[in-house]
Length: 140
Image (cartoon, rainbow, N blue to C red):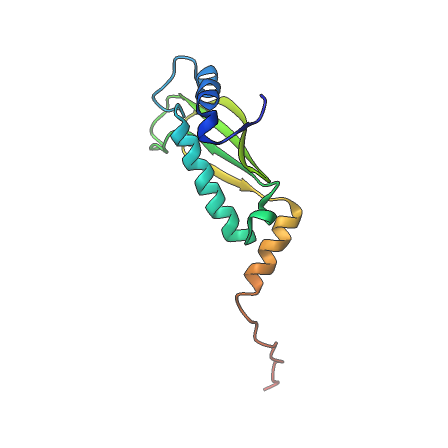
């Protein structure tokens, strides 16, 4: 699939890509531009919270599965959608959409960072606290 930038101007292309993947299924799938836009916004919020800036955000990926979790007793498969987004310098891009069989596991979300982003996230996290010096054990 050719990457599609997630913007209002590309609404029709995104909806067409989703329709192509979903076929006739609509109940537990991503079908609208607004759903993809909301996923991108949530991914951006989570990513910026970790790496601190839009410049540092480039290269991250985010995967989302449609549907909701259901009880373990639910034994039937549901047809859903899985989308992959990538953060580039100009924003989020839809890079892949596929049919996904859902059992109990709908609604999954996963952010993937580059090694540099991981290091930046750890650096920012560690800047938020201090560590007490190690105390030597006193012999009794």
